[in-house]
Image 1 (tube, rainbow, N blue to C red):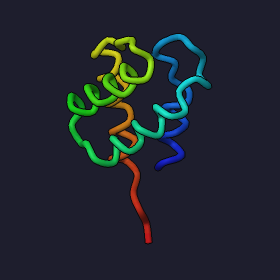
Image 2 (image 1 turned 180 degrees about the horizontal axis):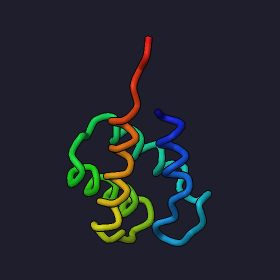
Image 3 (image 1 turned 90 degrees about the horizontal axis):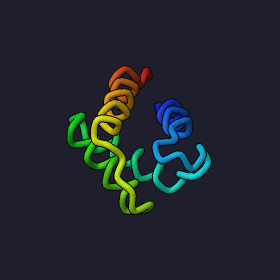
Length: 81
């Protein structure tokens, strides 16, 4: 699951700096995905993480789309023992 989440985030370039520009933010968003289960809450968290680092605001609807995709990955993954 974490690898799928990482792949999704690593291919996202919300501010146009290049996909290799967000390593720290990806780790922070991954942590948030494990804690937050609400799309709106996660979207606001994603927006805040990137705003803190780059002092630019990603539109909330863009963050909501990513939050939804991340939560789908999280909720569709199962841990088979």
